[in-house]
Image 1 (tube, rainbow, N blue to C red):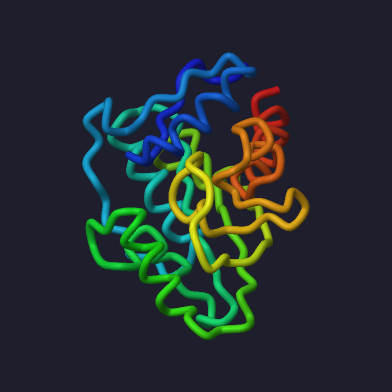
Image 2 (image 1 turned 90 degrees about the vertical axis):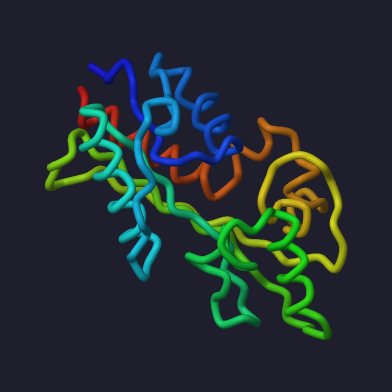
Length: 199
């Protein structure tokens, strides 16, 4: 039996909307950690998986509920993998999406190689001391544009060009994005594993 409620170890409203949409088909209510009064935890890991485990374990321990954490970001070839795990705070602590986009475009001025990919690592902890968390990952490859296009999505979506649709991620509708995005891929893998775990 699937748990009726899972806490999402994130305060990002864009991520919350994506998770709510994808998990509704399983009859699982996704609740943000902020709504349950979970304190912020310092992301001290040096990789996506370390940070996802830290966040999921913390939320599960504080709420007593199963927890899912997503650690994701954009990896840019010409910047040696940056922003990477620092994607949300690329332009500094408390940076807005626009601040981060502006810095990324500035760093890529004059660059011919604009290849990049979004990476998502998902971890689900059944409880705070779960020794075998469910883990899934996804990658979404594209290129960084020179200008912003589109108003949907969040984060770096307006400058991430999706070759197969010949538009940016911010020009895709929600259903298209969920089918092909890094998070959509990771969630698909997570759901497959969850069906086995909770069978």
